[in-house]
Image 1 (cartoon, rainbow over the protein chains, first blue to last red):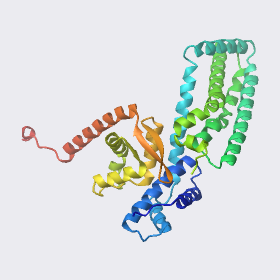
Image 2 (cartoon, chains in turn brown, purple):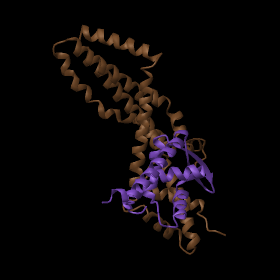
Image 3 (cartoon, helix red, strand yellow):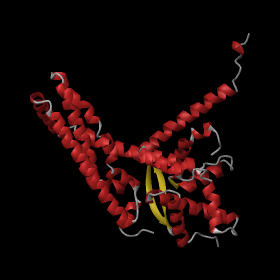
Image 4 (tube, rainbow over the protein chains, first blue to last red):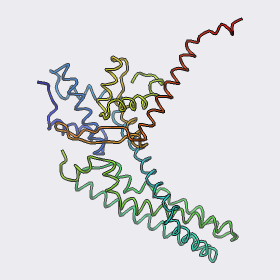
Length: 233
Length: 115
């Protein structure tokens, strides 16, 4: 009978991937199955090799950087998926019926800034405060979930990190100078467009996507259902 | 994978072609299938395979299914509808490339052009 990787050795493989900087359960699972298959493949030829010896041979095939390239590329791929998702929701605001709301908000913002351009600063400060508050809130929520479940899902981390929106909060500051210059149709229009677009992007990243996190996670990870139903291996 | 840019550039097409023929496959199965078909001439390295699979998945060309096999979870990849269409395009592109390369590497000497 062919030698098979035992359940205990599967757990060892999970520990092995974690020890080699694969933090995310989704990627760990895929690599564990790969290593287990490869080890069983080696055992067909050389049944006398121990589990550790066979694992050592297989791990070397990943090259000198081990799993790090696989992890980096996975992050890149899921980052791309997130931004595509975000763009999809963003575009909804420029289609009916959302378009009416977008148009209404744009018109009101324009009128407000035309009346007093410095309102731009207050509105942007409110937006920045919301971004900071929500990202800290999600960080805590996600951290607690990781602590409770003991598993990290890369796409979930990207969702609760709100696509790294916190790194962009310095951009609005570049526009503050325009509020002190001569007020004309062009500057007010530019500030309005910037304000409305950043507000929509922020709304999508801070509210819409996190609210639908479970739905997107289930669509991304078929194994997520198995995990949350307590069937984790 | 053989240390050649020529193979690396075709990895996605190789994966998509295999999935077109086999329906759904998991990572290790793909590496073994390629080895078998090419009689060990072509070895897809793990470090190249998974990034390629993840990229194709993120691009919406592959879909995934997870099943419990023995005592572990196995992730299968299969082509999406757009992946099926893209496979046809990429194979046609690859065939055209091979044809052009053959013409360039072993050109038929046209007697009419000789003096």
